[in-house]
Length: 320
Ligand code: XMP
Image (tube, rainbow, N blue to C red; front, side, top):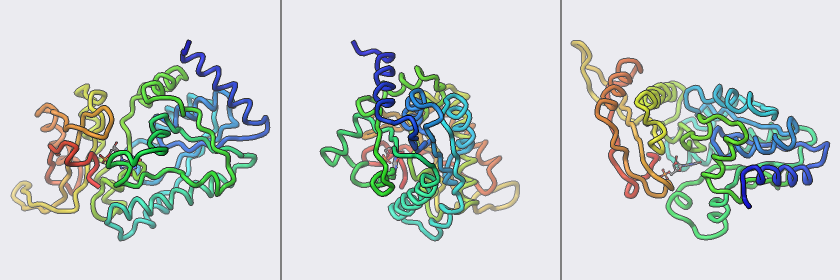
């Protein structure tokens, strides 16, 4: 009989048998569900011998870094190391506007930063990854759909060999819904377990055009307002993914008696089961109105908000 308790017990046995008493496991936390559940499961078996590395790329959403510390750090016995690398990522992205080039630079910088940190962890022989069953199938077989082939997903592929690490993947047999149940069983909060997916390259692929600190700040504020309004309306769990995008154009507006020429924010919300196809969310008009008013009134430099009504296909969920 397969139960979650039995799975946890068996996993703890397997992990303890594999990782010696003086060895440590390095675990990259992305802020997402899979890596957090993976780390929490390992921590259940190994306690503070699990060292979690969370890279603050400077491309995170508002409050994300603090949320990881609170939702994860305070609920497990793993060690949490937050690496502040925003400057390195911004420097790597300077002058870059092409989406795939952004991804490449972010991927390389991520690996460099992660490597530097991992090297400083003594006695670490293992690298943990929150690979799920569908990921195992995808990487083993077909070039599965547009997401897999068109976009370069950044992960720590190639790292284990380079650092002489052995890979440990305790979620390899699980589907997403099972991972969520496991997370709750391990004491992780709802807010983490039901978090919307967030792309590895973060806000960089939602900041169309050049990624600069001031532009990221505009995007971050607008994004936080939209997510807040969704939450107030009680719709944040109903939609699969929602976010703001900063467009690389200005549009004309009027404020008081004066003409303005400022940034445009697009907001996007989608409904989907598998993220391979998606429909745009039929959000209430009042919610859209409140979001637009709040963004324009409180985010400096934005004078227009548009709602994305494109399904996937033909659109993708992200704009880049
Ligand atoms: P698209 O835009 O291809 O997105 O319809 C499908 C899902 O994948 C996420 N996404 C990414 N995730 N690295 C990631 O880790 C990426 O480069 C990337 N691009 C898209 C997107 O947020 C959506 O959930």
